[in-house]
Length: 583
Image 1 (cartoon, rainbow, N blue to C red):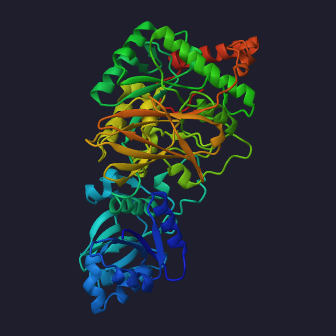
Image 2 (cartoon, rainbow, N blue to C red):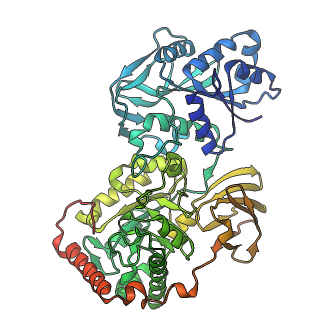
Image 3 (cartoon, helix red, strand yellow):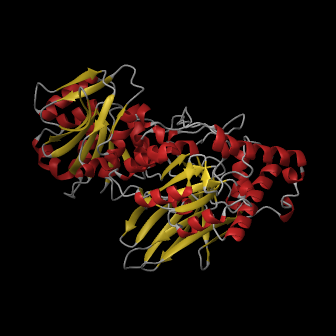
């Protein structure tokens, strides 16, 4: 028997609901039991392995400990209970009583604190990527609580005491958080999820789940990373970006750069920079930044125009590939981050495999509500099940990147040419801070990051379950035995699927309640790219650049004027300021 028990005195309390939903998010099955039922379950288990991971509020855990005080309970406690996670459900007197009992110290207590500076100083094994990080927290208007005890091991501390600590109760570790637990099905309420606003209700329990269920919960195949540079054409210098220097820095500071290339510039690439990209293909690559990069060009609801934009962008990039011999990654980065639901539909029916974007809320008048759990997902799937992989600006802080990584999301950052002033000093300092995190980052081109961004969990020694997000996935079997992968993908319109295929054959797939599933077997050390192919636009949907905007001379002139004006501004007008705005 293996899994989680959420202790709740009266049905499913708010705290129990929040905990159960978090466990479900990471693929962990959980049962909600009252303290008496929990005691009975622990006593009835015939397996003496440390199987039970318990969750509950201070009041419910205190009741369970009292129920387990008898001889029968004491005899099995340390053999069958792996660990306990305790949250503060707003009853500090219960938390105070619990810590006194656990620590066996009447001086132990829970106190209110106004401190907003916290630091993660627990073991690297437990804290993972969050290890050693500090930040200023927000959102605790009434202050926070801290633990005081000589018997505890501090995991997350403020200047006044521990806000998350480990104690031992008869050799069973109890992880005590002084905050409640985040409800991940609440609406996001902002453009993104900022861990500074939710650090205490989110970080302790996520660290605990990833530690306690390391072998059974969903984990990323790897932590892919890439730095995106928006806008520049392939010229030796654009604004503060000098590609020769950038290339040297990718090697010296160990990172990859993906140039979000505006397809409008497809005829204008400098042969010297093309050769530089080819020479450093493992470090420098191209992705796709809109089509003409006009204001909000992908924010419209005009489906016919958007299909033209998508296909025009793809055609221009193919022409650039042919002209230069430099391949691009079929990943879309929306200009200014603006997009509509219709734009996501258009991309889904094209050769693009995913979107990487700073924004997750569409420009539609009635935008689709985004939950915290949606943003936490490896790829946000709210728009026609076509994924948005989120990216962040360095100024959002390394703690936000670290928490994304803890969740299993890829590490994708974005800068603009003006962030590269002062010889890219700020950029490389940020990159160095990412590389110092307690995790190995796989710096790759953006296409590979998208293809390798999926969740997996072990089913047996030679089988794994995969949750896929992008339209393509790169699977590898590094082992010495043949391995079976059961792949599932959320899909809102399975009827639009034309084929699922690997590099060598078509793959049979089946419907599931929320999407599709299929299986693939890989031999030892084999790797395959699996594609989901959708019915594409008809040939009449686009007629090259002689349709829509291409046939509109006024539009063409405005676009040309805008692009050259932007280049004049970026190359000659903009001062050396650390600005994050761009046209």
